[in-house]
Image (tube, rainbow, N blue to C red):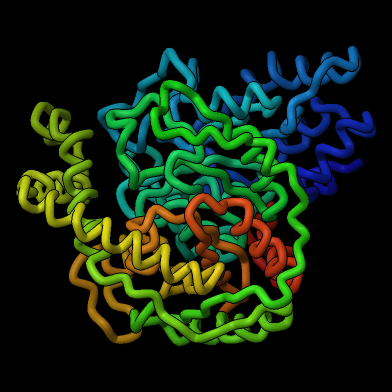
Length: 480
């Protein structure tokens, strides 16, 4: 099978070929490494390649296990790229920061442990903004990541390198993190699937605060089925992560096909009145009919997210002080402007602020829980804007509404983060310029599988995720 054919296959399709011994892990790896060499310079998605590591150990071991008919993990022989916020033993991990430009961890994060234990082959690290700050992927160490659908646009962030690598078919699987939308926004911008799991569903270690309930690790792939496959490895409980669930990860092996006839779904195109770019609104407009076509009982209803902004912004600011205040104090010159601003804001947070934020969050959770008792899912926008210029740090305005800070345009995602509910971005449409637009599926507490089932139904109905970027080796794009 030609390299291009292998790289265009989904993770689930590659898994079937590997298990039937119709292709070897070495062949799969070699095809993806050649594609990385050919296309990555144009998009800057994988910033620290790990070809030697992959070829020397993991792929060979995967083939030997297949030949010996030993036990195979769910991700056996599949190439995977790890976000540059995720520790990888012996492979440089910079966090997008000049202060850590040469840092090489001596441990793997639990995310990397679980993926490699499941048989995945690490091929490199994906780009992220400094310390994951913001939803535009650029930093002083590696520069910007470009969108494979339009090299003049951003891939989003902060898991932008992961999304771009998936869209360009450099890897079939990638991991990421999500505080205020960092798995969902890049997925929407790059026409792939990103799942923000329920809090604790994916164990996190090492961590400055393993009890922090806003930032999560999670999967990104090209289909909901591939995300579910990845969750079979990522969702295993770990005692080092005290909030990790004790729900069997094998639940993600259940079929994603489901009859949605009569399922109550709330449709909210602007999440209660947020400004939305007209191109995004037009791309999402058919969503209500698509959901109804699945047999769902769709109603137009906005959730009451009162207090969500204050909850998220207060705890986010506090977390920046917890994690980065010491570095900022010792090496202020090594900290970028956005990160420094967040730390300065966090230094002003008081105990009274935290008390108020937590009371608001408790009320928010219960309102959302009750909302989802009447509507099994909420379907809404991911981003109010399509991919924007790669040289712009953030949109100055949305639909005529001026942004007061670089966080304003993220409200459609970070308000959902504040609820603690599982949410996924699934490909849905394109703007007239050919830029991807996703929709966000939000589920009941702990119902990550249900979220993926509806995401799978939407992607099957629309076929949007099958539209490839027009990226070529010469950097010329076409819509063929």
